[in-house]
Structures are given as structure tokens and as C-alpha cells.
Length: 555
Ligand code: TEU
Ligand code: CA
Image (cartoon, rainbow, N blue to C red):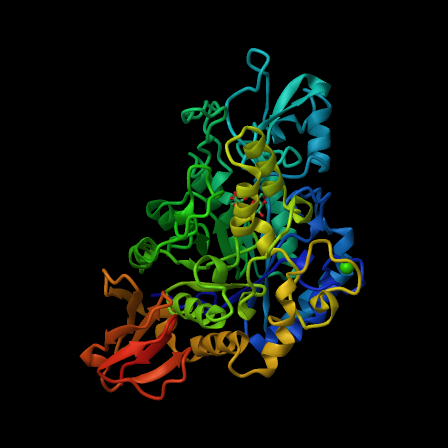
């Protein structure tokens, strides 16, 4: 397998609005990030993926961009950005930027021009269509509820927005759009950034003719079926030729709806498109009748089956990215582990072990390295996320979900769980801001914060540090092949990684029950590489503690 720096790296994701506020306005900013670069260095991460910092009216926290080559005023200036990039590079940390080019803001000059008249040279930068029988041009639903079309009086036509109505979709079938996007990307590369995380890149090629989707019984709008469209690979290969291949970059596509077959194209070892993809199959496992708005839990069997499928099927053909949470997801320990005081730290370490020992590039989302949990939002007034707010409005007004149930689902699945301020210390507002934070601070910051954990060698923080450091010492963690053991266990997730003579055995107890496990003979002389309990040695049959994780290296 070809060695690449981005296969050996660990990525840390920063959501700038919630990371660190330097000037007391309650909003995280670039100078705040600069003040925490030594913290990232201490953790040992190699790459930062920075969520959007571009100029934006903030309808979707920066995923609605009005100028790709300028910085959001609340976050700072381009000079601040340049200092941050330099500060990262000085510490051996690379910077991957969020690239949001499926859509722009409706306040982007291209859209303002496009909207102004049917003859505008920018008209075909977006999707404009006539209404049908006084209604929307087709039945597509927006990812943020309601129709994906918005009527615009100026020209008496509708425009397409797969996300909020302030995020009109760019028309990638127009070569001028591609050319402008590519030149913007080259501009950032010339500045010296090290890669891109590509927002909903699997949706850029729409179905020709924009046909109606298949309506589910009782539904008003249908899934647009816009993922992995007919030209997506052609456009990414063009992007690769025009931009990516000219620099030494790490690229990761956010690919909702990606299948194994598609992933082999997006992230194929031939390097024609991207370095790796984010797939969401394990993330979508606990969806229900109303998508994510449910209290279903993920069960170990389906989780293990999905993860194993991606591990084995991409082996040698494409590259995985490994993540359990991000800025759109609830906190990993709350969702996949157990965030009660008794098990929070142990289960957070177990999940980290299970993930970082797999084949692929691991991602740590800010606060995950502290075992930060979901937030007990009291009422809708405390919710900021457009997705949750729109879904609450639609699903409760139609009577589909009772308001108190919906509030409960938001506490379990809402994106704001990931967006509460980073918990730096036990001072007011968790040390995030001296002002009023833009979103509530999780009240558990006195127990869970970076300062306390940096001092405690047994903390989740130091466990992540150790895992990240191990990756540098153990090529088998990066390049070893994966094999699942104990396929039918109700409690344990056990697998091996093998590279030549090197072999690791990874044992994770996903339950709050003690569980016996017989160590396979070939590991009888094994040593403990890492574990979340203070075991000195292991032999024969061991009794695993609740949420215990243990990695043995063949002797
Ligand atoms: O997310 C795309 C996406 O699929 C999510 O919006 C998803 O529908 C939702 O979060 C699941 O709960 C990307 C960004 O990561 C997200 O923050 C943006 O809101 C979105 O694109 C639009 O740019
Ligand atoms: Ca600020």
C-alpha cells in the first residue's frame, strides 16, 4: 500500500464559532484559535480541519458564503488568518480548509447578479425554473425542511436550494462555475493551505431535467436523489487536474449517500479524485421514520457490521476516514458510549481506541478529546441550529411529533450538541469567552474541561494523546489489514490488524457489563500497547470491565 502523509495523520476539527473567543463578543475567532495552537501541539495532532471562516451572513453558521476570498468579520481579518496558518506550520500542523461549493449564500455577488435578470451572464450559475401549476418546479425537499425551491419575484421564477433558502445551489453543469471555483481554490493553495474538506461534494451533479422524486406515503415533498449524480466524478477529476494535482494536498469529500462502489471512485488509490471520503452509514444507523429525529440507539451488531464492511471493502482500493462525531452530529460519548458519570471517561476512551485502531485517517472533533457530552438544552430558546429550528416547526405543526418529544430528540440528535463552547477550564463560561456566549455552555464544564484533564494523567485527554502518539510508532496502526473476530458477540467488538510480522488485537467492551474473553493463543506472549484499565498483563481468559478497551501487540 502506498505511504502518504495524510494516511499517517490525525486530524483535529475546529468549529471556529465555538472554539475560543479572544475579544469577549461571545463568538469564537481566529485569534482565539491562535491562542490555543500550543494546546493542539500538546495533543499531537497533525492536521486541523477548520470549518468555514469565510465572509458569510451566517444563516447556517458560515456554510452560506458570500465571499470565498475574505474572512467573516466576527472571526477576524485575512492578516489574522495568515498568522494562524504560519502558527500552525511553525508547529508542524497542516491546515485543511472547508470548501463549500455546492451552494453559495444568496448574498454572494454571483447570486445577486443571477437573480437580477433572466439575461444576466450569471443567470446559469444557479438553477432557475418556472413554477408548475402555480407551485414549485418539482417536489424536492430541502435538507432543512420544506420545499427545495424558493419563489423570487424579480423574474417570477424559482431557484433551487437543497439546504436553506439562503443557500442557493450552484449549477456545476455550467463550465464557468467550475472555472471560477477552481481559480478560487488555486488562490487558497497558493496561500499555502494543505487541503480541503469538501462540503456535500456528492451532491454537486444534479439529475438531468431535475425530475420529481418518489413521494413517501403521506409526504408532501420527496428526496431529490441528488447524491452521486451523473457527472460528479467527471467534475472531481477536472478539479483534480486543474487544482489538486498541482499541490501536495489532503482532500476529503463529505459524501452523504456514498456506497462502497462510489467511494472507490471518489477516494480511489489511483489518486484521480480525492484522498478520502466521509461515509455516513454508521452515523445514519439510528435514524427512524422522521430521519434523525428519534430516540433510537445504535446497536453494536449493526455498527460492527457497517464499520467492518468499510474496513474490508476499501482495503488497498481506497482510503477511509474514521469519525464518530463532527459539528453536525451529537457527541460521540453520548451517542455510542455512555455519558453517565460512572462510565463517561471509560466509554469515551473505549470508543477512541476502537476508532483509532482501524484502518483510515482518524478525526477528533473539538472537545471529543475531553469526552465532552451532549447538552441538556432546556427549551427551543436555547437552540440555535437552523436544521433543528426548522424541523421543530415543521414536524410539530403538522402534528407528526409532539413538541416535548421533538425537544427530547433535539437533545439527543441536534447539531447544537457539538456546537456548545469548548470547555477550557472551570471559570465562567468554561473559559471560552469573557462575554455572553452565542450559544449556551454545557453546564458540566466544571467537571469536564481541558485544564483539569491536562493535569490528570488518567484523563480522556491524555488517553487521546497516547493514541495519537502510538500512531507515529506503529505503522501497523496505519497500514495493517483489518480482520473481524467474535462476529456474533452481543457485547464485544474485537478485531486484529496485521502488517507483515506485526499484529495487533483490539478488544472493546461496548456494554456496562463485565464480560469474559479468551485471548487467542497467538497473543499469549503479547504485550499491552494501550488500554483504559490499569492492567499489567493478560493471559488466558480475562474478565473485561464495563467499557474496557485493550490493545495487545503480538510478542
Ligand atoms: O452537511 C451536509 C449534511 O448532509 C448535513 O446538513 C446533514 O443533513 C445534517 O447535518 C444531518 O443532521 C454539510 C455541513 O457539514 C453542514 O454543517 C451544513 O449545514 C451543510 O452541509 C450545508 O452546507
Ligand atoms: Ca470573538
